[in-house]
Image 1 (tube, rainbow, N blue to C red):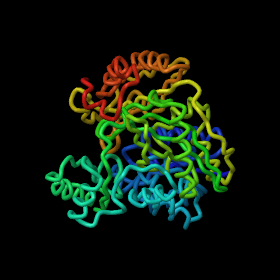
Image 2 (cartoon, rainbow, N blue to C red; image 1 turned 90 degrees about the horizontal axis):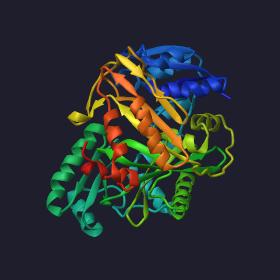
Image 3 (cartoon, one colour; image 1 turned 120 degrees about the vertical axis):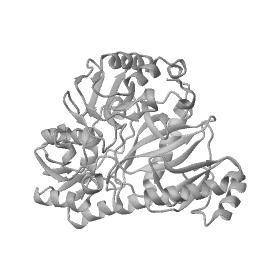
Length: 444
């Protein structure tokens, strides 16, 4: 087992990893930018190293600075959390070269799944159901139009190096293709340094459902059932729950088998997710594989009663997993509490938290790094905390979430708490009738 782990991240996920390390008897090293010197992950780690100024490129995305911090503190492993360098092939490879264990996927696995066109080809070869689309990258505009006619409109252009909702455009008819082609390529080049595009059939009103998987160094793979991530805005998830209200036992089994096939196809090592779009007929299609821990891993932990960060660390240390699949017991919901103003198009609301009181009670969990007097910097993601509830039934979980949201007091900045309060009162949400288009008609 590792003696000391450096956490190459910030905020609530860094604190989350620190807690598990402490419970496992492993020393921890926090890294931080000057903007994060007062964050709780810095306070609760055994050691802390400043790695640069607020700008991410010079701190949390600086591989030399992070490796230097690991070497001067004699850390024998690095946990990347999510975001930042968690799915960076080069970072995983540099860790290997410096004989520091990267607690995540191997470089070749990150490369294979990070390039969406390559990932899709791999999944098709493995027999994983995929959305009809182009075979590999599109050569030019003429190739795009040719493929669109074959696939049948509407189609969606996607950046092969895309992520976070960037580098995607829906094309409803041929007259829109040229503008969409030029715009998507330009955005992809600016965001990812890669303007390669591929095309898929656009599933008009899908459910976004992901399967949690784990694979060890010995070829064992298991799944830990599903999470429904359909409540999202501009491809950013707002609320997640498990089990999915749209799920059936037959579909869960089918998707679990597909997810395991996907993981075995790349000899996956670590904890990750296989993400699917599911249409109204409950036909599922592979969308992408995330080779890291997810923001919403918490709800899976609550319904299978297991620490997924601990599982990550054990797998990285070469410990075998049981290979047994896990199914939800109870129902869990997570609301992402962001420093955003829902009254003004969810614009960021950084600043000082003047008053802070978090909810408690049975079945309520808060993952956060903030406190009264903490200043939310404007340099990073606006998430303040994750509010998670677990209960025996979905109805009980919604009622518990309503109560927890009512207790949650954050003053000094605008937050998404009022949005979540209204969502929990929505009739369609309460019935479990929603897709990824839900936010287009939801009136806040």
